[in-house]
Length: 343
Image (cartoon, rainbow, N blue to C red):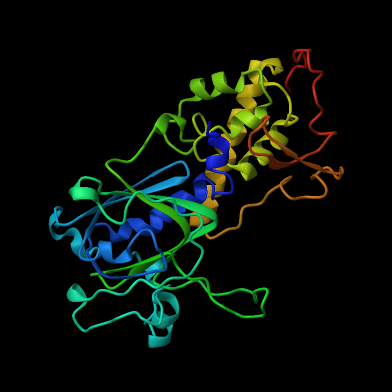
């Protein structure tokens, strides 16, 4: 049996993926005129001449719809917002060879050009169901990001430090899509697969207006540690390890507290912190601010107490590092329901 928590382990959390969605959206309505990337299982050339028609986000997954024909009229020349145009730059021949490989091809007629896929890069994370839309039916590209997954607009990621061999080698994108409007997208460290439609359940998405609090509270009340439940993407899609740690600390709840022993008001407070922290994180991303954490990867909590760290997870399931303060987050006795009154 596949553990649902392990499937999304180490992925960027909901706020990050929504930022990626924001970066991709200006390209909707444009045609792919040139391709590249290191992907072996998903052929970048299969995107040639396709039109990006739609993009959706759900939890930790990004969905992009590609069609062979332009179906949305004159919107194919949507310009990038001014904030993104600032990152645009002219590509040098050396940049193209580095990112797309020494065998890449370029012509003065982009609508007819195809760049050769270059072997290389880490493809261990890719689990793909084909190299292109099957018979025109599977037109949605599902993108799931690895631990350091990202999307870059009009520029390529650069090495921030030397590798073990001492080489300052820039990361190689899995997929590069150049569009008719002049810009391009570069996808790094991600899994991609074709599907007939996006798998979307907004009632479980912590950043969706349709997020179902009642369903989430019912899940939290289960007779298992709340730190397990919070990572259950069936009820908290987009919630990852950072949000888990921060929400538990701010609610004053020990990670291994059984949800069934916590009072309904305490569970409400926990859910409030989940939603509030996630929304603040997303807003900060749009404003270019780094999210401030109080407990995650800290040695002391804001009150000055020593922070504990240990890997927690269900028996036989994926274990995630968890930070908590024994004084600010006291553990309830295993068989004693919470009686304390919230302030």
